Amino acid sequence: MIATPTVLLLPGWQGSGPEHWQSRWEALHGDLRVQQHDWDTPLRGDWICQLEEAVNQARGPVLLAAHSLGCHLVAGWVAASPNFSPSSNNRAGRVLAALLVAPPDLTRADLPPALRSWTSHPLRRLPFPAHLLSSSDDPFCSTQAAARMAATWGARHTDVGALGHINSASGLGDWPQGRAWLQELAAAAVAANPAGSAAPPAASPFHSSNLP
Image 1 (spheres, helix red, strand yellow):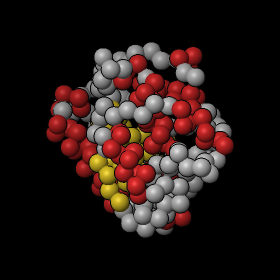
Image 2: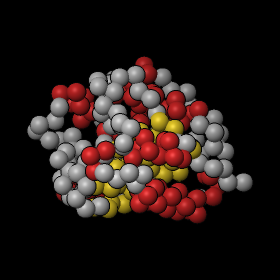
Image 3: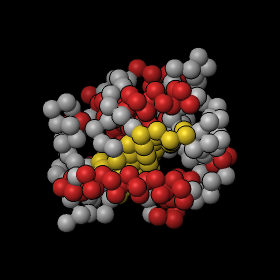
Image 4: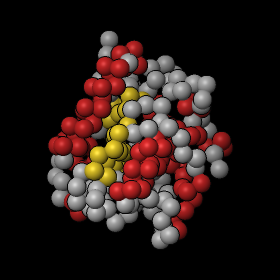
């Protein structure tokens, strides 16, 4: 039996305000926001542990909807979690797919000091389907840098046009097109691996002491 996926919302640095599409989805669809202890000082290891805990507590399969630094959180979590070691390759079967919206380019010379610790995590191909959405006029990432990240993560890449950082200032409202892309990802993942859409087994234990 296919279980209904839980959508986990992964905001970026400084969180997502009330007019952000993630906040709209939370109110409209009942999606779950992964809370962080400190949105202004994003400690990489702490953020990764919060995501690991949220995924392990979810009932059934999970869809990730990440924005900005939240996209790098997905990549960092995959690199750190025992459930995504080369031998397990998404052994827990919890994540169906990830929508990665407007990841910032962490190689920029003007990267804010608060984000510099995030540049050290290894980049690897994600072990689940992903769709990266970038904007042609994002002040934090060029189209070329977005394409490189998509290639590294093994994600489909779509340039959505001139929407800035694809955030509250972009005036997206409930962003039905973004939701359609998420649903498309989910449908494709279920079709490709119906067994992975059932309630997953327990995940491996994970502790912050494992992280730098």
